[in-house]
Image (cartoon, rainbow over all chains, first blue to last red; front, side, top):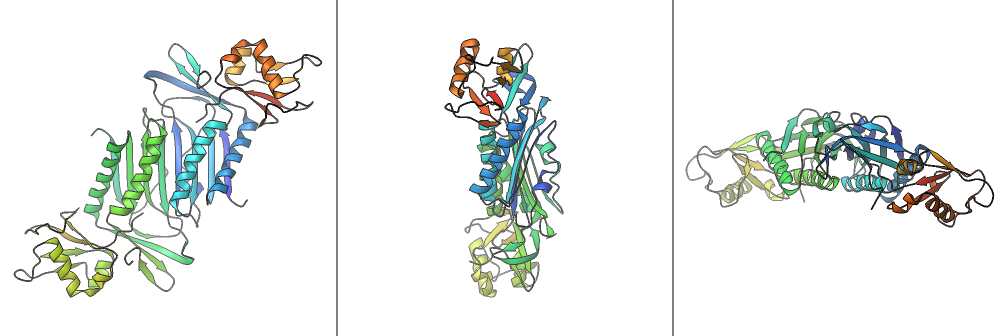
Length: 140
Length: 140
Length: 80
Length: 80
């Protein structure tokens, strides 16, 4: 596959260069989603989020997801990056994006990237509230 | 309406701060689309694009579109900006984005912003090829 | 009555605006304006669409043009 | 046989890994591993789901665990 894909597990997400990174002479557009820490979950105030990962597997799954997207749609570049460690409200924790000749492909692919990452990539999020902390989605 | 909307007609699009601008403590994510100049249109090599606008009306329509999106979906911030003048291959010409508590809203809104901008905002694009130039969409 | 011209509309007329003399020849409505323009410049008939803005808002065909209105011809838009 | 633990799995066991002694008590397959773990630590039964990765790839229940496999317990993921 000749598509350029770029995945990573990082201490912090820098969104400032993502559109420059996705830029390609054959692309008419890029679509990027950034996930950030929200202040409230079910009206409970979140102090911070803690992310941990099984890094070797996470990188492998992210690479698979990027390649799947590049096979499903005509993309020129794909990026998937996730942060680990303690994150405060408004901090970015994940960034996914794609560039393509026509906007349909990059929009649909971008949505696929984040939806599939949430389903499959071994990353665990603990919500820290004032008086307790909870591993998200752990229990039904 | 209390949503923050920000529209503009500019000489150049700077995508580096857009996620910082869309950041909001009640947002769990932001979706941004950037349109760039593509090297080929129907396999003809594009030298550059020239954009002109009816600025007063363009700003008014962009504001309307941002407000429509903020009424249709639960958004915390909305951005719509378009460049004018001569643009080379890979240069950004338009940026639209939204942030929201849940990602469904910002993805759907972002798509609405760019689709509706293309339908209604009075901006005209001339494709400059080696031996001719064409006002895009002018003729059937 | 002055009409602002953009994009291919400006190229067809050869200037950034077009003036109708007051009196009989001045168009009374948006549809009248479009028709008169197409008669003077037949190239307008070849466009995919033709809209008119009054005071920087899209105007319906039936809108009656008034003194002081800012009028603009909007050929097919192609932003993005 | 050592099993890597992450997230709530690590909290349940109280350590980052768990060791099965060789011989009879060592699980032979992925499903066997899950069952043995649930018997030793009943808290695993309360989770929304429980997956196993072998050599950093999701493994089917029927997979036969081999010497040298890197084995990890994958509780419900929650990235993004």
